Length: 104
Image (cartoon, rainbow, N blue to C red):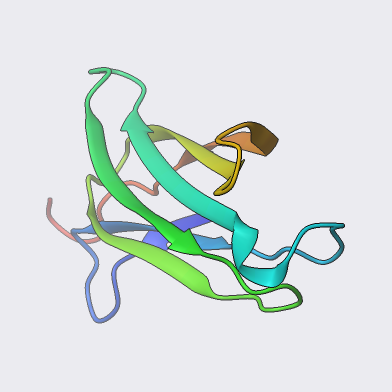
């Protein structure tokens, strides 16, 4: 999970997350992944992606290119079994986007 500037800009933040399922004992499409990006200061979920069927050994990059600059986010990745609904994996990280460049 990485924070930076949105492509081509210096006044809009971005959060990039690479999500991969490398080993599991479930059928390939039984893993459903949801990515949530929450602004720590406000508690507002600013971006939610999913759920989507994750393919084992794939590493898609999910990006949120409308983040605030100089903001701290909690990024959560949750994997659920589609067949049972149980959470089979969960990870989170705190990232901070850089301050604006220039005269902002």
